[in-house]
Length: 380
Image (tube, rainbow, N blue to C red; front, top):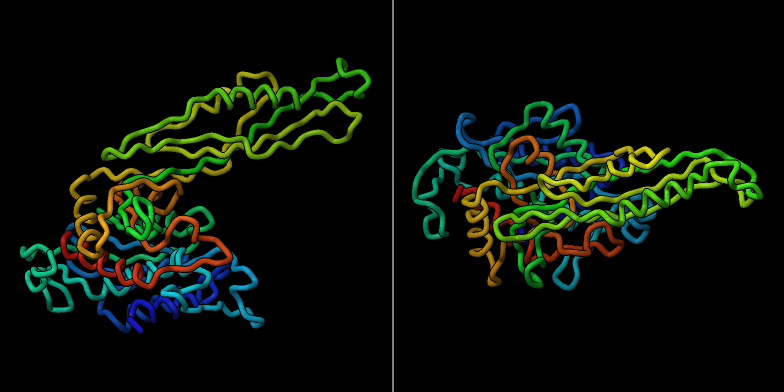
């Protein structure tokens, strides 16, 4: 069994859908035992480790160790997580999203030669692996956050506490976007703005509808405004990222014979970097208010050289020809990019694996991501 598979199995076996403490303990203890890095654990539960000179340019390998609640088939009667290996894949909650990438990043953080490192090796020792032969020290950072599945709780706490690497590779899924099995490099992803349109009117008996103000009608007028909005789009290194807006729920009325006095419309917007759909236009309708409940930021890489550096590492790690792509889902890279960190996303998960009852990760891709993270750190 390879080291990355063994470490992934260990992480995945630890329940972390409602309490990440034990998983955080596992990561922290491993880092303290396997490296001589500076390891810290903040009040939120985030685990951060650092190697190399603090005044040098920094590259962070970033993940999260919380997961969504498992299906019954993914736990034992005692509540333990089931981890199974079959058909070249690891199956279990968190294998794809994203403890597999966390394990690969932990090992790459330990093993990468980044200038004057604790391992005693330098880039020139690994020139035959495609790395630079220039011994230029840099700081390598590892971070595993809590609360990503709750809207980036851990990432936001770390940023507020001063976490600010210059560059980051966030290990969310990027495999299978350009071609089946290829591990690509995402240079952009969409954000999500969830909002509510509230229409208010006045109740009346349905036999005399003119005696009231029908809130459902006002809500329908607002929906018409939303349907006519143009979706914003931006281009990132030749990759188009297009947003979307969709009404996903409508709730109004109290009885079949009462003119409704209130109606709520839920709106799901997938945002793109630097652009938002003008949803505030619905407030031009009498009796209509618009409220934002969640705004997960999108991400756009702002350094083509960094993107190409990670892409080169990805190319060397596989037979396929990976590409620069975009992702439809928000990740912690959005919070980091918003705070000033230059990000890309590169990781194990394939489309359709995360959050499913049959979640799994390819063992070949787990080992590949270790190679990508290590090589990218050495090229940085």
